Image 1: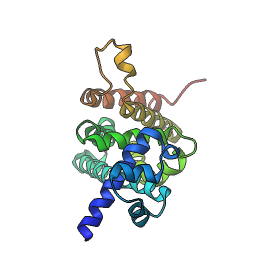
Image 2: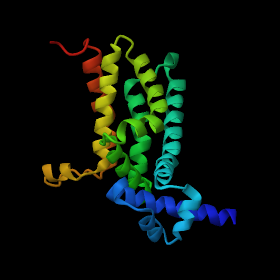
Image 3: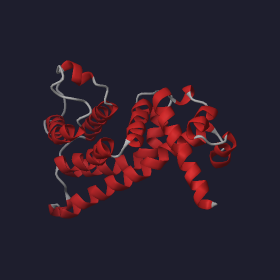
Image 4: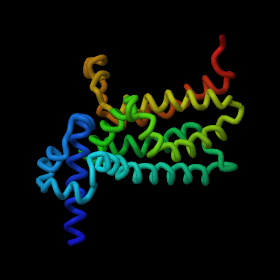
Length: 218
């Protein structure tokens, strides 16, 4: 019974993730989710209680895995680094690679999850609260590593640099196809392996330009 209940719960989460990513939180009903999952609506109420609880469960399910892998990767590069201070490129890679790798190879569920995160990040209604709740403890750990990698930088420049990095990630895993059109098909927004080769050195250069030159000049 417990195994069957967990299977049903995961089916509901999968359908909710897919539909929330396509239509947004307000564009989906519990009934539509349970119809997609081919389960009785009462089971969604039993497992989650409300649509908001289901939405939170969708976000938490993959956030826990993603945050665990990112933290393990950061700890690994710090343990291997001299004096425990990892390079800027390695820190950026530890933050971005698990995300891009899952979007590239993790299947349609991860694609839906990242599309949903892109929506949330760009939403005044959800962005600040939900991203703070699910990701800020991990982000603060990475920002501490960035401060050690750039010890002379002003704190405000570290935070702005992270902000720009986060925006680049959101645009990238949204896979809008815009770069496909701009390049006349020479590159593709879905080619996340190509992204991963280029993003760490590009973002690291931006961090250094802003943080190692004393910030912007008036």
